[in-house]
Amino acid sequence: MNYYTVSLLGSILEPLTYSFSEKIPLFTKVKVTLNNKELYGVVLEAVDAPEFKTLEILEITQEFFSKKQYELASFIASYYICSLGEAFGLMLPFSSADTSTHEFAEINSKIILSEKQTKALDFLQQHKVALLFGDTGSGKTEIYMKYFEKVLAQKKRILFLMPEISLTPQMAHRLQEHFGNAFIMWHSKLTPKQKKETLEKVYDGSAKIIAGARSSLFLPIKDLGLIVVDEEHDDSYKSSSRPRYNARDLAVYMGQLYDVSVVLGSATPSLTSYVKFPHIRLKGGHFNSTKEFIYEAKEESLTPLIFHHLKNTLFQKKQSIVFLPTRANFKYLVCKDCGTTHQCPYCSVGMSIHQKSNAIKCHYCNYMEPIPKICSKCGSDDLSSSRLGTAEALKEIQEQIEDVRVEQFDRDTITTANKLKKALKRFNDKEVDILVGTQMLSKGHDYHDVELAVVLGMDNMLSIPDYRSREKALASLIQIAGRSGRASDAKVLVQTFNEEFFKAYIENYEEFLEFEKLFREGLYPPYKKLCRILFADKNGLKAQEKMREMEEKLRVFENIEVVGAKKCAIEKVANKYRFEILLRSDKAVDLIKAIRMCKNTMAEIDMDPIDFS
Image 1 (spheres, rainbow, N blue to C red):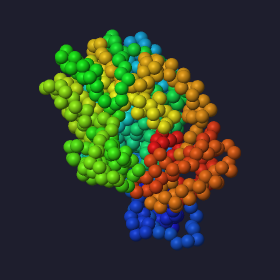
Image 2 (image 1 turned 45 degrees about the horizontal axis):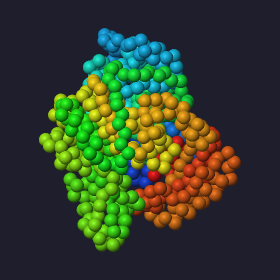
Image 3 (image 1 turned 60 degrees about the vertical axis):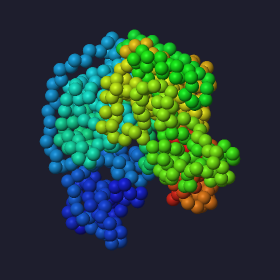
Image 4 (image 1 turned 180 degrees about the vertical axis):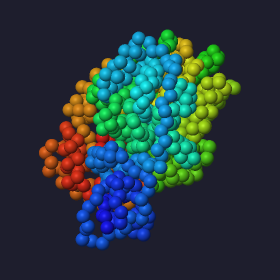
């Protein structure tokens, strides 16, 4: 009999010992039982016969993980402090059933780079990890595509990471047109059938360029030659559930592991990438248009000035986009008599109004109830809404501007890839005059004829208690502004009381990054490592007790600093009370060592956190 340690896929358990009559190659995917349940696992190593009785492995599958995948899983488990099973649970195995190989077809390149673009490509090819810091419309995609051609000529494959929201029909069409069937997309909106078909192309080698969201990092790709992380600053690269990895950072690690080049690209790069990696600056766009920035010191609302510009743009038969950081109608329902905000009964947050469904909804646990008529605290019927949302803005525009064709563009309305494709087509075919949306508006979409961009809610973004709030607010504004003036001169109307800040850096993001360095040095990333430890339980006292217990142990370590240990900003989510410890250190290794020595069963580790709510 042979004995093996097996890591259960997706499980928090440590590897378990199983037996089998025949020899099994390491990293083979197998089926086993645990507590009368059938589960899948990966064979880690052969071991001596244990003193205890073992269960037998039920089935040897035709799937296996590579040694590199094992090394990547080990790194994820170590750095992000999770089990090896959870790390392996992210990955898709190789299949020994697929042995067919597809030839690399010759590509007749129609891409001609400018002198600036050629210089940028040369720079990227000279570095193992490099940042392409290119303005919106400066031709980053053409540089990527030219680089892809060079990698394909070496008979290697490419992984092209984009934020989920940026996997647009336009980008797919462009890459498909140039690279044909060698190009595929991988993201969460694929149907099970589409996923199966796409995965078959990855297995048989016909997929040479794989574009996808963060999960595509874990596809079984042979002969990898290049990883590109577009919009590298985007927060959606960070997973909000265990393991809480950051796909951008893992891409850089994979570059070392697989010995392939990594390109990070953005018009508004994160300070971390700007400081850590060599960069090439690509200024200006393909378009000779100019942008006029207009600032209005008002609270978040559609003002006479905004309506004046919207009407004027409409009169000139041009299009507008209106950006708000909030979806649904209004963020909160507040009683005017006693000031009580109508909160979710399971989370300590206000609930958003959704007029269409005549309900208020919690955007944290998805609890819904009918819109209340009276205050739950004092019984008053004088309830008002604060903070403008997309649905309300759309309604206001329709009431104020006659015969306007306006459409909502957010996660409430764009729920499938097909809906996104149709909405963008309607807008670019001039069937819609004004697009009202959230962050989705800024993500890599090409709007051909937008002459006015209205940006609301910037001050709310600036006031978020987060060391990156200025970076995030300015980056958002630059990204939204970049969607206008692609073909002609444009106006960007920004509603803010912080005109001085935005005016100083809106057209000089590099200068902002240099200024931001001084603010962060000695306190925040990239100069320090942060780790957030979360404790959540239905019994608030128990959660607090577990937090205090770990905090006490952590304070003994001299090379880490306990910045704070307290209730979370949002104290309750999904009926669980939440507490947190924030740690700071010069080195990640010191944080990992201390946490491993002090960790208790309730502690949820978030290394390199980006969410502090």
